[in-house]
Image (tube, helix red, strand yellow):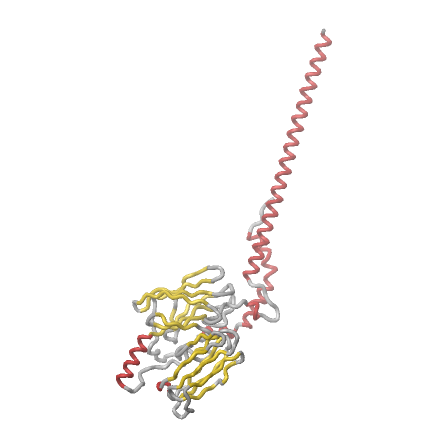
Length: 364
């Protein structure tokens, strides 16, 4: 009996799954048309910011929440702390305070605070923020607020902004320069609060690059690892068009769960080897597509393939067992026939001997 091969099994599944695959593509296109559009505009909802030597990295997925099976990728924004230092020195020398460019639109461009349940984070707005409005947001609350700074605002030393499940209290604060904002986490779970709007804004085409954005990098790569399976791949980073200092490596996450991004290489001669991992206080893990499918939850391709491979293995094992049984039966039949032949030969020889012995007795 022949053993089934993989192409036979998958071929038998094609017609059965064709209708489902067609419906799945249509449904996913409708469900994720907006997230896919956001990828092209540089929107990202949750990132982790960290100082790495003389640079600041803000890392996450290009589009968050990240969904299994949908186009996404690694996003990293790189700015130079050295540039900030030089600008502050220039400001001190000139005394006009106009040399520093304040980043109001990038996630974590001004501050990022990781707050455990019941913890707080403070940030003081100096005189350089006068007449500015600073947006801020938190994850996983997915809410946005703003802080207005001006000399005509109320004079207080500290303003408290509480973070709750349903947003900020208050969502807008008006302060004078040199006032401290204290963010307090009133939830039973950790959160991350950071400057910048909830949806990241892409710099318009032709706009000048931020003074401290690190541009034109070709010597930095990222190793992406799916943490559950430990499968990894090294990818090249490409600078986002019209968004200086923003780099991406696009891919489709085909398994849900946590991911690890390891950046290595060098920046302007400085060796880099830094790792970021998704979590509830950094950037999002990949969500199974089934969690947001409606009204019918479709089987993921990986689940279908695993089921088909399981069926293939079972079929091959059954075929092998049947083949072994058939082979054993054939062997037994052959041995029986051989035994019968020997028995017939024995009878023939015995008969011949009997006849010869009878002939001898008659002659005597």
